[in-house]
Each structure stands twice: as structure tokens, then as C-alpha cells.
Image (cartoon, rainbow, N blue to C red):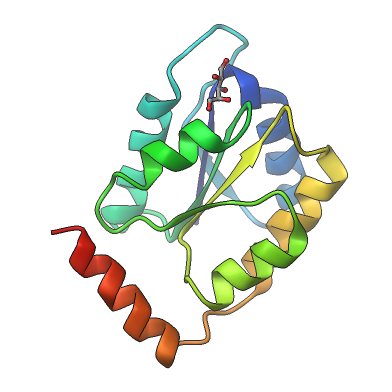
Length: 144
Ligand code: RB5
């Protein structure tokens, strides 16, 4: 199960991503926001990342205006490796090398079709382990 969330700046793109994934049979648990009213992206990041660290969801998608605020907030949470992606290559590599468990997108930056390609790539790629696991272990040590 994928967790997904957005602020008002990412609402439109989030709704398109949910529909796109549903067409492929991938269900998302939607942590809001659900309307255009202004809200604070750290609150949404906290809820989506909490679902991941609790084990309720395997990974998550966060969308704000730029994707930057969401990625900064998500990466404060222990156990979260959030990657802001604006291109398909980065989406592929961040799963293979960083085993990112959250992908962040900018609803005011990345167009719908490119966002779909980024998300599809990130979901389908696999972590390569090996030397990359060693590096992730070092990232985990930085959390202490
Ligand atoms: C909201 O206006 C905007 O600041 C937010 O969506 C995001 O871009 C922050 O990084």
C-alpha cells in the first residue's frame, strides 16, 4: 500500500497521480489535503511518513508546490529517505541506490505526464543493495 499526501500547491497533481495509479490497480491511502484551502505541508508529511515508519504503508508520495518543503520535512523523520525528483533518471537511481521510501514532486514544477513517468519508474525499480546498503546504513547512523 502506498501512502500519498499533498498541500494545496500539490492537490491537483496528487489527484491525477491517484487516478493514474488506480488505473494500474495500485491503491493509495490518501492523507489529504482534500481541498484548495491553504494548509501546512509539514503536517501532511508527518502523517504520510508516520504511516511508513509504523509499517502501515510501504512507501509514499508527497506533493507540494515545489516538492522542496515536503522533502525537507520528510527527511527530518527517522527512517525516511525522501527524494525530490523532477526527472525520470533521478527517480530510477534513487530507488536503485538510495532505496528511497518517499518520492516528492512539485505540482507547480512538474507536468502531469512527466510526473506519471517519474512515479511509475520509481515504483517499478528495485533497490540494488550491496555497497548501497552500506551507504544507507551510514545515513541511518547520522539520524542518531
Ligand atoms: C505553498 O504555497 C508552497 O510554499 C508549498 O506548496 C511548497 O512549495 C513548499 O515548499
